[in-house]
Length: 256
Image (cartoon, rainbow, N blue to C red; front, side):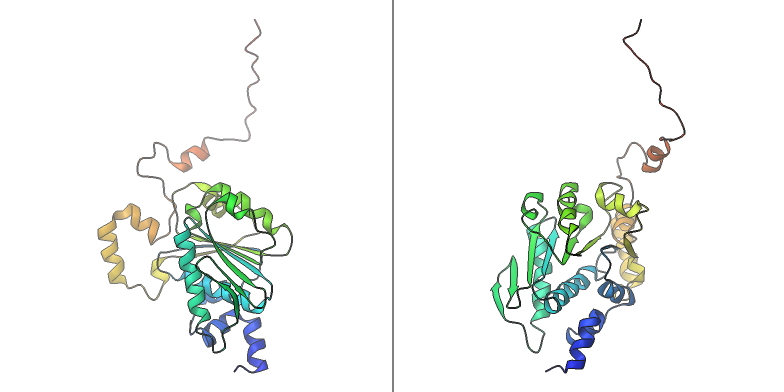
């Protein structure tokens, strides 16, 4: 049984909660993610860097310490969303005094406190039925549709919820790439390559470089946004083709 002092510390410090209760000793960047309270957060992270586990711990902390809160976990497929939901439940089962549940299935969990954790596929129509979430986690965001992103953002108009996008790159396309490249200061952005992850050995990465080739290795482990192998034009060349200092021609083709 935790003391009142410990409960207060865990309420105020999600990273300390993760370490003490979930036995999840976060890397420094993971601790920063757990503690981040701003409205919008992007995580551009290598495969197997621990980004999904970090967000699962963040989801559980939100459900436990914000009674009546709604957390949405969204991924390109229901299977992927359910995997993170499963990680949340595994963490919950590690608690000395797990919270009572009034609903518990593969898609959603509702606690006696009224907090809900719901996992959803990347479907704009399915997502639209929810309002006022405390936390929205979009896993593999680079592979979710723009329509999903546009359906999610209005949910955060009221209530002060947080939007977290996490992914490896998927080419220079889509809302995730556009948001990462934008100069919007409203986003906190975190970039972690495989070499920065202490659990991934240099030997494994060398094997992967040989097996995958430079294109896929750069995307999956160096988290680089790169053009598709069959792209006719480079992204930078297309962007540089546009200039704002040139007046458009105003030609009336109907005049004699």
